[in-house]
Amino acid sequence: MSSAPTSANQQGAKITVYWLDKSRAQRILWLLEELNLEYELKTYKRGEDKLAPPELKEVHPLGKSPIVGIQAAGAEKPLILAESATIVEYLAEHFGSYLMPKKYPEGKEGTIGGETEEWLKYQYLMHYAEGSLMTILILTLVINNIRNAPVPFFLKPITRGIASKIDESFINKEIDTHMTFLEEYLAKSPNDGEFWVGSSLTGADIMMLFCLEGATQRAKLEEKYPKLYAYVRRMQTREAYKRAADKATEANGEKYVPYSDIKM
Image 1 (cartoon, one colour):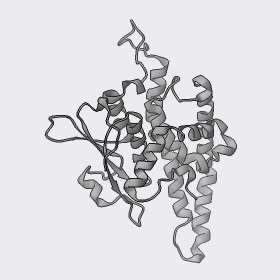
Image 2: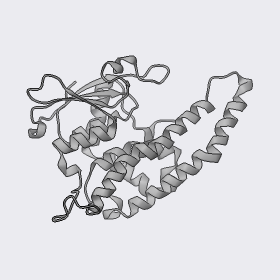
Image 3: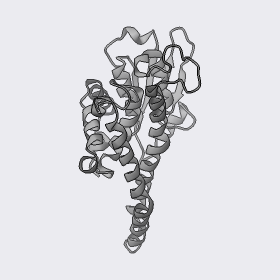
Image 4: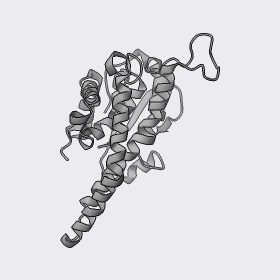
C-alpha cells in the first residue's frame, strides 16, 4: 500500500518500507509520517518461532527489519538501507534537516570540541537507543522465553529458577540503572522534558520512543518513572504517530498495538 498525502519534499523519490510486525520498523513509519512523505508499505509476519520470514533476506542478507528502499528520480535501482539509526539519519538529512540539531555554532565549524550541546546529545541518544538500552530490553525477552519455555512440568522449576536468578542478579539492576539515568536526563531537557533534545522533535525521539514503549511494563514506568511514562504517552498522541499506527493496521490486517500496551 502507499501512503498519502503527497509532499513537495518528496523530491521525486520512491520510498519503500519493508515492515515486520512487532518490530522497530514502526518507528520508521512514524518518521515518514512526521516528514509528510509518501511511501509504499510491504508487510511481513513473524513465524511461529517469532522470527522474521526468510523472504526478508531477499531484500537484505540479514533478513531483519526495518529496511527501507529509496529510489531517487531517474535512478535505475533503489538504495537499500538497514538499521534504524542509519535510516533515521538518512531520511532526516535528505527530507527533514530540522529533525537534526545544528552541529556547530557560527564561527566554530570543524573545530574539535566546538559542537553544540544539542548536537552532542542527539548523537549520543541516536546510538544509545540501540547500542545500550535496547540490548538490555532484548535480554529481558530472552530470559522471559527461558522462563516460559515449553518444557516438561518437572523441568519448569529449573527454567523458572534460572530466569529468576538472572533477573535478580543482573537484568533488574541494569533496567533500574538505565531508567533512573533516563528519567534524570529527560528532566534536564527543555520544557520539562517535552522532547529529548531541544524544544522540538528530533531523530532522537524517533529512536528512543520504541525502546521506552518496550520498557513501559517491564520497568513499571507509570509507577516508578513518571517523566518517562508521560513522555511515552505524549508522543503517542502525535497525529503522525497515530497515522503510522493506522497505516500499519490497514496494511497488516491486524490492529497495531504498541509494546507499551501489549498484554504480557
